[in-house]
Image (cartoon, rainbow, N blue to C red; front, side, top):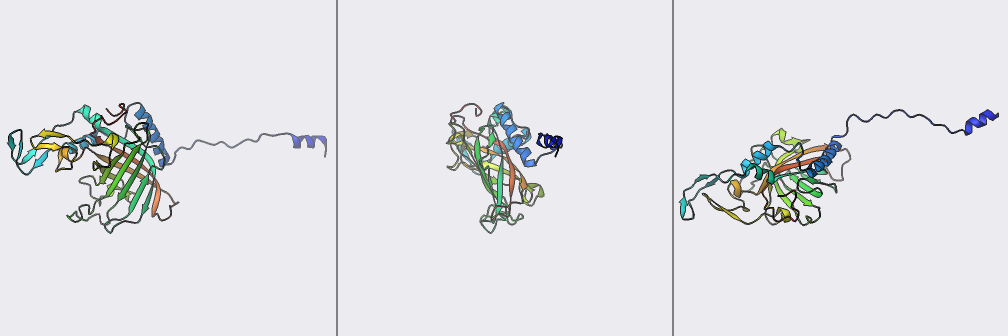
Amino acid sequence: MNRDQRSSRCRPRVEGLEPREVPAAIHPAAAALASAHAGATANAAGHAPPWVSQAILNQVAASMYAPITTTTSTTVGGVTYPPGTYSVPQPTPAEIRRQTYWMEFVGHYYVGAPRFSDQASTIHIYSNGRDVTSNQSLNARAQLLLLPPANPNAKPTTNDPMAGQVAGLLSMFPADALQSGSSFFADITNIPGVPSSNPAMFDHGLPSHVQFTLDPNGVTGGVYAVPFYTVATPAGELTLNNHGSGGAVSTQGAGVVELTYHPTNHLKAGARQSGTVVVRVQGLLNLTGVANPLYKGIN
């Protein structure tokens, strides 16, 4: 071996690498997660993300503050009002902005066996430690339970008022300082007029377009506590936190929940289907604004 060969073998070399182009597209769930972080930035700046729809918020307001129909005579302040349909005070545009609520997160979902004979499956959705972004909390955790009907064409009856309907619960727990004692719970049902047999209601065979109504029955609390107070209307003195026959007495919060599913081939043990899901919630919450120790972002 000559000297030149020995020198060549011992000399360090730098090999070139083939170019690595930035991917032209990313997984939809990853894109949604990036959108959620963008939503957090929007929240910090005081602006709603682009998917929050003023048209939907106006529809929710029209439903929450719809006229009230009475079937018996009512006396208020010495004046007797006959049975009929009466309008209720309407929120101003500024009040709708104050009541506007939105929440977004990317979580995991698991589809399991049904719990009862009138259900098709049990769907669990968890934020799995990831931040839940909203206009009222930059750091929260959320869970969602959905129970699709076994027979989408079944008609509700007295014995089974949820027949043919999607049922469920939504919870959100703010983790911000001074808000950790708050809890938001909402009931999940079909959007009125959208039957469970409507294909537009589903994504990958799972409920993707439903409504929520604030649940005031002793679980929701803290910032989201529903007060006991009444207002006098021609239909009578109405306690606003009780479920009633319509209008402002029916709920202090309502809106829609949109879900986009991204299934995976790696199923959790016992699950029929699992994967990543993007959850977006928007609507109105008529809160007092005095139960929150953090003023900014609520009032």
